[in-house]
Image (tube, rainbow, N blue to C red):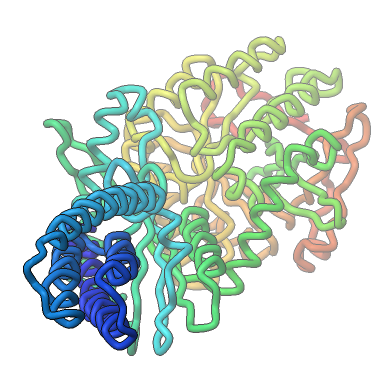
Length: 571
């Protein structure tokens, strides 16, 4: 800021110095040509003296006033009558100097306060980096382009509460200093501070965008690293969303695009995302899903359904999985696989878990389902000590025997492996069985399946859909081999045709689930005949090859180890 002020001052002086001298010379010449007296000159010269004091430094204002006083004395007096014996001009020259110093000092103080307030309005008070106001006032190069990068660090929301605001401020200062140092090698890049640990980087491209690649590579030096603050190690990582705008576009539109790209990075768990129009449509869809979901539950548009699970070879129904389905205002139908990943990024997921738990308990308490067992999905991202305790409390408070319940964990775990293990052990301690989606297991620590007594591994439909390919087939065989060696049962979901069924049975899968056996059915409120969900979107093969002999009513049981003492016969 000081260098810019100095440059601005030099620019002003380079214009003022010749201008003021020209004005002074002009006044002197005018007085001389018109035969004016020194007193006339004394009045006229006050005009350039005051103007000079208003817009120039104190030292120059005083110098100009002194030179003007000299011009009024010896020069004008000599030109007028040749008498230079009077020294009254010196008193007026001193008055000029005093007036110029006072006016210039007041003006300089006013300019300094103005610059100070301008700086406060356009810079972050903690780091002194340009802020959002600076971004909005930026200009796109007339013969190039500008990249706007939105950078957000994954911060722990408990840092301030646990260590205090001073420690959190130290983290912000450290990261800001590191970013500033990294970008110091790129004069066309400007680092700006938004809020908390969120930043923006403006990159001016005067010819091409090659510099952006090197900037992104340099920024990677501060991603997924541990920094030490006051002797305490702090892990930091970030996500970036960016866009490139050309002359004619508005900065506000560029900011909007970069923010959408950043949100997309978080939604899709990507390190860097560049804005596209398709991303904009996707983001609008996710926002509408998140905003509509709460009212959808209230309106009864989110419904619970079930799909039966069958034993391999005999194909007897051996249990059901409780599923969520959302019928939106426009009539479109969404499965849990479509909207749950979006809800995981919001606080709405807890509402879905509570709703599905209540629906499953209500249905399990119907007289027709007395003693039967059921499975309910639980998002891994919500698997915290609090959520697990609330779930167990709800089940036990309903009067249902917890041995009737199995919790199927899906998605990516938010907690560390040891915390996840403790939460799963808590469920088993209360008699609740645990199933885990295979893809969730491999995306998490191996400790989940090696050190936690899991009952069931579910083989995701994304794997069973590739039984006709060698890699897909070999993956199923390896999963089954590991599960059998660990005493864990397996369920292959997404079985849609006889070929997939035969392969999974030959591979040793214990249980099968999919449209080939049954379609999801709405949970009946009366417990008599279930309502079948419209299935125009299910595979044609599933419609044609549904096996005969499927029971007419819902049978709620749960997959168990065959050697378990409390295994019940399927009704």
